[in-house]
Image (cartoon, rainbow, N blue to C red):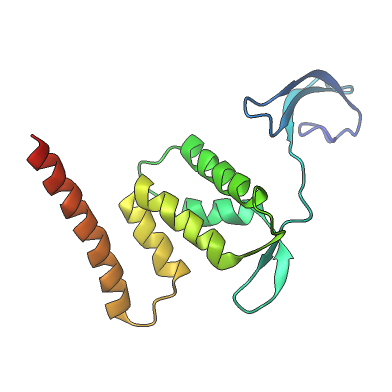
Length: 162
């Protein structure tokens, strides 16, 4: 591991620990040249998980690509970085827990959609507008109406409980 401060290749591990959920290893390191200390995280790489795209091509699952899509949807929304990380972790765990080693991109899109719908309605609309690739404005309006109707139902239910 190269030192991020001086680029030296010789670093040593000072401390090692596991994350709370046990999915990664945290290591504190120190550069042997400049004594700069930094933290690295190791996650297992599941080479066997593949994603089948809409066009039929298959590629390796990319956690960063998933995260980037979610971050675009929640951009300028009141959604914490830790919430995004937890969402990515949950979706990745769901995919890893399946029997199939090849998952469709549409399954990933559905998992993200479901989670964003409960998390933030605007982020959900942003995500599905790209994910579902609406070809007509009416399709987009139908999806927006469904979200607004659900919000109205929730509002009416909470008022009738009072």
